[in-house]
Amino acid sequence: MTSSVRCIGYIINLSVQDFLFCASQTALDDSLEWSDATQDQRMEAMRKWLRISPLGNPHNMAQHTQKTHTRIKRFRHLTGGILLKRDNASCWNACNNLLESLLRHEVRHAIEIYIDENPAWEAD
Image 1 (cartoon, rainbow, N blue to C red):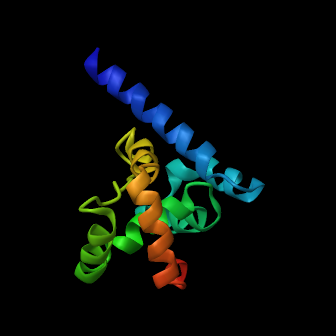
Image 2: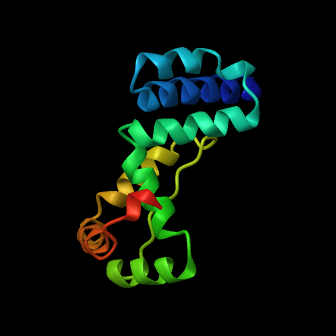
C-alpha cells in the first residue's frame, strides 16, 4: 500500500510539473514523449522549459546564487544568512519550498540588490 501511495504521488508530481513548465504546445507534445526519453534528453527539455516557464526565473535565481562560493557568501550576507531552497525533479514539494523562500521579506529585498549588482545573472 505504501509503495502505491508513493507511486501515485510521483505521478501527480510529474503531471503538475508538466503543467507548470509547459509554456507552449510544442513543450506539451514533448512532455507526452517524456517516458521514452533518455536522461540527457530529459535534462535538455528541462533546460528549455526553465527558460520560458513561470518557475524558470526562481529556479535560475536559486541556481545562480549558489553556483560559486563567492555568490553564496554574497547572497547570505544580503539575506542575513538565508539561502534560497533549491528545487529538483524528485521532491514533490521542492517548487513550493523554493517559492516560500523567495517570498520572505529579507530575501525579496536581497534579490533586488543582487539583481542590481549582477545585471546579467540570467545569462549565466
